[in-house]
Image (cartoon, rainbow, N blue to C red; front, side):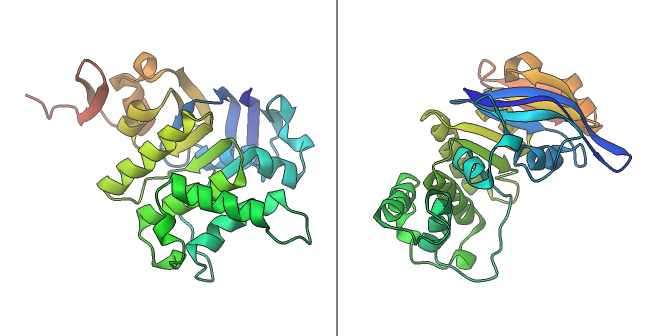
Length: 259
């Protein structure tokens, strides 16, 4: 089973933002969406989350059109991890993660033992149990991202939609977050992230979806599509792509830098 997007189009008034987007991300896969600012990545995510209605086409989860799912049903299927999050109140970490379990309780119910255990398990899995009583607003960027991932795990949704999860993190936290998320795919999670980091996408992804001017211009395994021509077209800069350690990694270098 999987997340599928079929011929999805979206427009803001007369301005067409997405043009016949097609892709599939299966459980156990990590898919990265690459593209410059303004190509429609965030709009695509909002359509998948049911926050925007496509002008045509559809998004399906396990074969069901998301438009046929209630908000509660959708929350049981897919979790969203934003790039940043600044709550009005400085909730502690435990309560922040507990919020992810609301889809499992009734409108007038309070979280019980089952939800508390889900929070404890999620914090333990990510190695941040020691942060449980800390104020979320007092954490570092990397710690906040791990808390949001823990909240998604506690939500018990097997599809994770991540909006540039490491864009504001330092090098160490970036590695920790990406390694953690990559590990979740080995447990059967489907992870879809948007990113501006081609090298990160190559290193961690099973598939890359490349978007340009609202359309998909390439989609496939990193080794099959990642080259200088693609990166140059996506970002409007001339680059050379170097292979490292028998192609385990590819690095983008501005053209003309190497002599």
